[in-house]
Length: 258
Image (tube, rainbow, N blue to C red; front, top):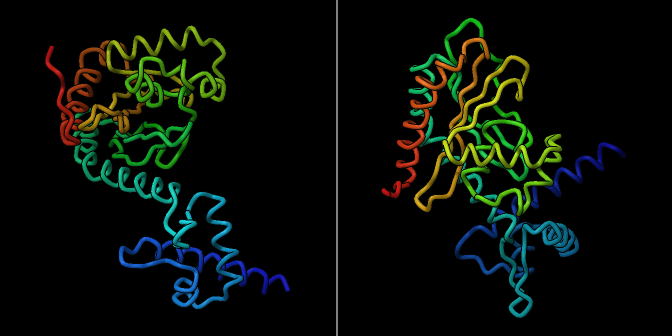
């Protein structure tokens, strides 16, 4: 009985994915009869799948024409995937340059709701180094990458929705965080120690697109004992600011000359 239930659930999931694929086609008039015929399922099963997908925002129905189409959630997810793929393709050469120049681990980080995700990396050749963070997620305000993305995105980020995110990161002193974000906005770089892990220093700069929107952050991780203040100020930070500007230009960003 349990095996049959599992197989039924599995087949329903497959049909739901087939349905979304059908709705992504340009030339389909996606009425219920058409979908039933193409998916080779019963009307009851089709409406059960459609109802679930509508509730989750993956499918919408034109009430007058009786035609189904992809919902905003599905479209937003597709755009997010395309943006991430574009970031990876354009940014990886810069990651390699950054990692080789300083022999430290370089990452691309992006926002996903209230979290920062480490989506690509080029590791250092050092024997002593931080454990890989690829694929890991952290609250926005718990690390340099999240702070620089938010600080460079908006001057009133805390006023709009940052206080909730700060609470999730365990930050109670909002005034101090606000002052830190202002300083990051002024200098264009965020630095933290022991926030991602004990003994790890993180340096992050924002990546912008053609519209001036922040699409992610170029992030360098290294053991704190190698990231001395003099090295940060004279070597790491100037280099990262230069590379982030070059990478932003690949996304069409043009710095306004004052």
